[in-house]
Amino acid sequence: MTLTALQHALAQFAVEREWEQFHTPKNLAMALAGESGELLEIFQWLTPEQSAQVMRDGERAVQVREEMADVLAYLLRLADVLGVDLEQALAEKIEKNRLKYPVHLARGKADKYTQLGG
Amino acid sequence: MTLTALQHALAQFAVEREWEQFHTPKNLAMALAGESGELLEIFQWLTPEQSAQVMRDGERAVQVREEMADVLAYLLRLADVLGVDLEQALAEKIEKNRLKYPVHLARGKADKYTQLGG
Amino acid sequence: MTLTALQHALAQFAVEREWEQFHTPKNLAMALAGESGELLEIFQWLTPEQSAQVMRDGERAVQVREEMADVLAYLLRLADVLGVDLEQALAEKIEKNRLKYPVHLARGKADKYTQLGG
Amino acid sequence: MTLTALQHALAQFAVEREWEQFHTPKNLAMALAGESGELLEIFQWLTPEQSAQVMRDGERAVQVREEMADVLAYLLRLADVLGVDLEQALAEKIEKNRLKYPVHLARGKADKYTQLGG
Image 1 (cartoon, chains in turn green, blue, orange, brown):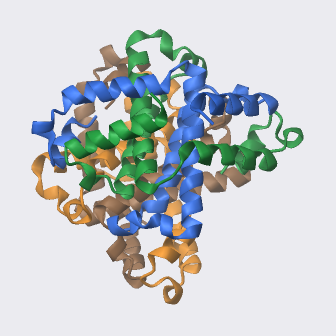
Image 2 (image 1 turned 45 degrees about the vertical axis):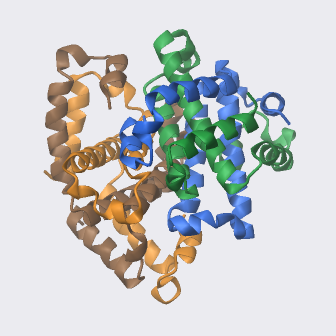
């Protein structure tokens, strides 16, 4: 399914359950942050190396996939409610970041990255 | 651009800057949560009604759009690094939620929603 | 118990379980954000008015209290590991904010608050 | 200053600026999560080893300390508004966790920790 089709499915899901009343931008931003927090918790005690192997553990792989789906769900709902074209917004952000982080200055530098990375 | 095209652009962006070393799943989950937190901050003092009008303020509209793009960027990078098909994962999650929240039980209930909503 | 006594109890708790190896500042910052996310989820579908009454629901009151305890726990562990005096840090921050948000400029303004509020 | 004194200072700070209207539990939970996200961002590209040395970099040390103060500020405001005794709540949670994570089962196990760690 495309993002647009997923957005329609999510909107219909909310309408059927009369959940639109709860889907204010404020509440959806909270739900998005909450799901990001759940995803974060899967990784919190893992070493960087363990985190790179996380999909090899069947149970955790399912968890990671579901939390990522939840994050996408709320991001799509928020975009729908606010009328934001997410793919377009990201394409533009990438162009903007090409100017903000020129290759010759940013190469291999986490420090630079962190400081410029807002 | 499609999600796949955006993923390729983001991967290339990281490769050019030698940033792949920083893009462990653990770090990307942190960056995703960090950006969700920035999006959250835009809404934190707004009433539900003000949050619904947030795109009418030009400056804030730009901010909201950019933070949403950042969230999507890290979600796509994480999916790429972990080999997760996000659209497929969400399509499956929606089917699962149809069983978990039957219309006749879930209708109009935030309480139900909250408790079942993990 | 004072904060210092609580910090000692938490440190001892970690030592007894050989969990100090997991308590890097990076991991503790993740755990802190994860617990803040769980607290957030309790409030995400509530209206502002419902949120003000949240402690009247016995079950939810317990949940809120426990999540707040978890946030404090990781904040204290992080402060301990980094050698930060939290009470002193906050006292200084309040003084700094007195200059940043003069009463005559900040009064009743959420906008001001949001924009200056970093 | 004690936690109680800090809570009084924060309440007075809000009253003077007529910010109490913004300090609903819902909004304070959002602000707390937002500040935790800012703290998280300081650590997101650091290796575990670098994160352990974070206070040796003067500029970053100031940032870490201020973000931790912000987290504590909103946690204290939330506790004040909800009537939660944070120190008591944490003391009780530690006792509860002693039963939940017996030393002989939990020793050195991040897996156990993660799964039981809610």
